[in-house]
Length: 177
Image 1 (cartoon, rainbow, N blue to C red):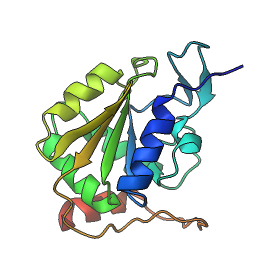
Image 2 (tube, rainbow, N blue to C red; image 1 turned 60 degrees about the vertical axis):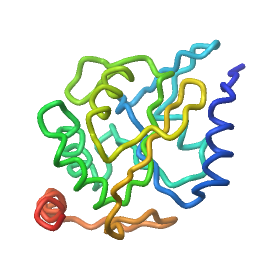
Image 3 (cartoon, rainbow, N blue to C red; image 1 turned 90 degrees about the vertical axis):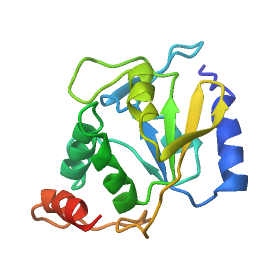
Image 4 (cartoon, rainbow, N blue to C red; image 1 turned 30 degrees about the vertical axis):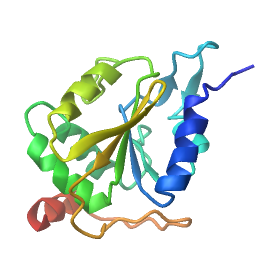
């Protein structure tokens, strides 16, 4: 039996009352299997936030079957100590309102762009447009203070796949914002 820490229910209630339609970027990026430091030692196929939080979320689709992969791969490439200024363009492009750092995941797997929660916190700590707003146990929530534009990518209940050169989305984002 898996016992989910109350942190997820608490953050979900807070978001429902304070920002019910806000888009949340979930970090750190994890491989396909995400393991949690819970009492029961749980591993799941992706972040548990996708089923425990009601808000629209941006997560890294590790499996490679999604059309958005190249753009998200570029984001995780930018999430590094060398290119923090480019991240604000990603936040605007996708309409990121909040960043959720899950400190209860088992840390980085040593692959490119896979950081431990502590490393992720260090990487985003230097971004002046992200401010810590509230902690819920092992979950830290940051607000994007400089959201300037309407997002060009929206959450949808239905989707269509379009074939083409997906990386041009990143090019458009970097030139537009």
